[in-house]
Length: 363
Image 1 (cartoon, one colour):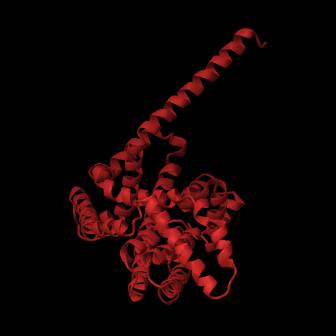
Image 2: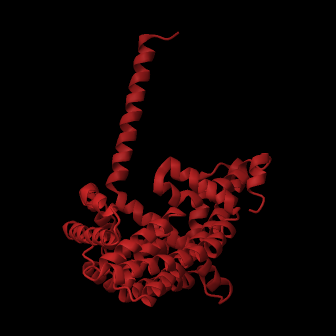
């Protein structure tokens, strides 16, 4: 029988759960930097596991020495990237005035006026439309500069958390077996084998995925840079770097990268003649970028998104598309890793399901 006391207790429990949930979310929000360090360290661990295993199995290093060597490789790579690229990227970013909303809006207005003059010289009435539409007043240039500030700011400020990330990564690599043994004590005996098998397969597949993704981004960066150098585009490194970073976003990223490259190319040539310099340079860069993207879409991405996680390209495309509709750009970025985790768990816990068997036949 439901009494007022039972109802009151239920309401109190619900309120207590809500307060507890709010406190947990607030706590997680306050330590978001630590959570980011943990995620980065986990990704580095997944990338480092194959290297660690190579040193142990092929070169017969003991576990601790193999861990230290793997971490030293990470440090050398990061130090090399910082030494070679970061000063150039930051200086070229300043040259492009990418960090100043007022400056980029002023330059864009000047560029739009040049486009309008070009159209007018060819007796195209759309120049009047361009002027009357007052495009610059309708574009939030803060979005552009905020995006570029996030990327450049992350590069410059990452040094603050680099030591923390490397420290966490070291123990993730070194004490991997300890974590597994500790996890066994918390896992119910009835599901121990399934959970441990799932973790092993997830570790293997995601390691391949993240290593492949790094290789893809590096190849795309080099190809973009070659295109920009061939056509003598100023600030080639910053443009190639920003466009390569956008390739993390599947399918939509390359399209945004092309538009960004076109805009930055025009801004880089600002002050030159539009018809003989700015327009041809922009068209050449776009053609070059589209060729790079065709190569990437037909060679790099199928290998990474299909073979590395043992999924069909159409399957991956649909997963990314659905994730994009549901959760936006962030959903598209994390779609493949999360889908891989769900597939592995599904195969271990529901092996008799017909749909699971179909989706996981290559795992």
